[in-house]
Image 1 (cartoon, rainbow, N blue to C red):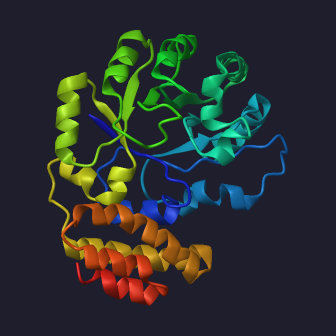
Image 2 (spheres, rainbow, N blue to C red):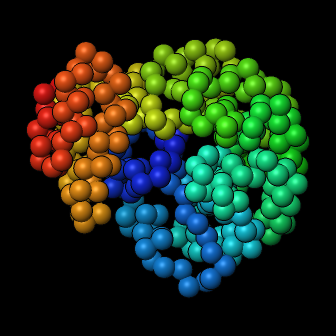
Image 3 (cartoon, helix red, strand yellow):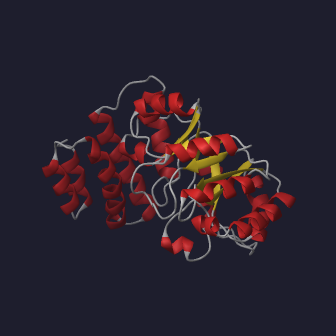
Length: 303
C-alpha cells in the first residue's frame, strides 16, 4: 500500500512537512503545494524555497505544477531536475475561482481539447516522470469518460483522482461509484483522494475499490497521526497534538515573519482538528475568537 500527503496551499509547506515527518511520518511521499512555472528563465529563489532540498527533511517529495502553458512547464522542468527531482505532478483539480478564472487547475476539465493539446506538447519533450491530479469533471461526472480517454493517451506515472466535480468543490460525499468507472476505463495506475478521515476508511476503500494507493489531505490535518495509525502504529495522543502545534507555530512565525498570519493558518488547521472534539464547543468558540497567538496556544491546551 502507498500513502501520500496531499498538497495544501499555504499550509503544508516545508516547515509543516519537516515537523510532521519528524513527529508522525508514515506516508510514502509528500506532495508540495503547487508552484507556477514561468517562461522567464530567471526564476526567483522565493518560488523555489519550498522545494529546495536543503529545506526539506521529510523524505520523498513530489513537486506540483499549476500551469496552462506547456512551454513554461518544459522550460521549468530542467530546473526541477537539477534540484534532484525525477517527477512532477500536474494539477488539473484545483477548484478555486482565482485559479479557474486564469484557465488553470480544474479549468482544463471543461475544455478537453485544450487539456489534450497541453498534455501532447508536454509529453512530446518531457524529461521527467509525470503524474496528474484531477477531478471527475467540471460540471458533471458524465464528463469522466472523455477525460479518461485523454489521460489514456499518455504514460502517466499515476493518475490521482478526487471523485468530485469542480462544481462540487468539497461539498457532499466523494463519488466512489464514478471512481469505480475510472478504474475500469483507465490504462494508467489510479490513486484515490477524498474523504479519508479515519484509518478504517482506508480498509473500507481497499475492500470496495480494490486499490492500494491513497492520497490524504484534509484528513491528515484533522489527525496528523493518520498515516501512522493506518500502518498499525499508535493512535494520536493529545500531548503530541499540542507539541506539534507549538512547533508548527514557532516555525511558521519564522517562515512568514508574522504572528497574525501564523495565527490565521493555525486556526485553519484547528478547524479540522476540532472535528474530532465535538464535545468541546466552548474551546472551538474560544479558538475562533482568539486574536493573539499566545492566547490560541493556551486555549488548545484545554483539549
